[in-house]
Length: 420
Ligand code: SF4
Ligand code: SF4
Image 1 (cartoon, rainbow, N blue to C red):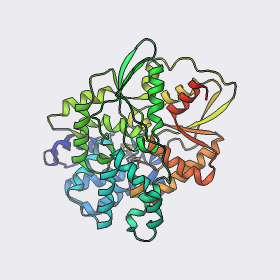
Image 2: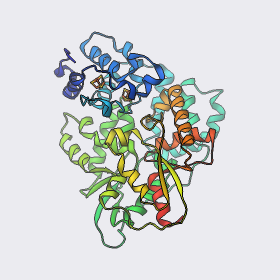
Image 3: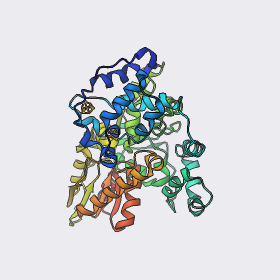
Image 4: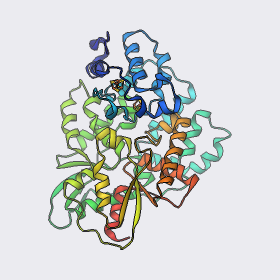
């Protein structure tokens, strides 16, 4: 697309943003892939419409305030990227744009308070646990005293939490050591389902990997990055660059975190840390991919029963990191396990970081559609590789049929290895 953006004026993000705008040829192949187009039905809520809007704002032809409602409605699911024949890197445009917009925009007080609360709690497991424990009380108050902007956040908090799991700094490989890896423990995941990290460590060590859990690590920063809080994202990225040692791989088990760490070179673009960011990002790999690289987790006992599992592609695994076949292959290694596809496999479940807090109506509609697709698949288990998707699926499936188990792929694999 022809444009008059001056990359010099946009700062360090100028070049990748200009490249994304320039490579869009306006063909519209991405429209069918975009969940918000399906929900909202307007050109300005499509990838193509949003690219034009961002270009116009960067050129000074459209006011920022006019464009923001359509850009805020973007899930950041990146379904538009694999659908695009011109290879537009939409991620290089939307998150940098949100970072630039944040310095200019004004928000209502309730929204400011809600954003501040989220940024002060979600990335910190101890704080988040304390807040989530108060969820019951908060929910009962939500209808009465909390500002409207904060109610969706309260509704998402679970009524009870599993006990926390304190992780060691190091876990030895079982048998011959084939690799040393470092695990990103994540933030919200440690609170909502700490067993995911336990299962990850169990399967990795059984597969011959020594697992380190570096103490100085923090939240990956993806949540901050995707809502335009560039300062916080840079700070988290820098702290993780310091914390993670040189290992064979940095393992992530939450799609959003893995995708976020792959974006460290963009987050730190134009800073002294850009090169180190690229070095770390190159070592980041999803646990499913790493296990397949190792040749799988070894022999899995045959329980002599058939189980059907539906696999849900987390957007930041499939679109963000191009990981589609490895988790399915891992599940198919389990004797008796039949892996089925969801009818709307390409569609986001509506979780998308803090999207279900910021845009609750669209998020709820997508969540319900995904839950219905799981029901329609006939599966008894639905597996995915992202805590946000798992929480969203649990919430919406729970309203329709609570007999379907919602599990992380690595939990399904660990249970099968243990014969449980
Ligand atoms: S498919 Fe790609 S090139 Fe075509 S309109 Fe969408 S983003 Fe632009
Ligand atoms: S990231 Fe997702 S919601 Fe946003 S424009 Fe692309 S496909 Fe649509």
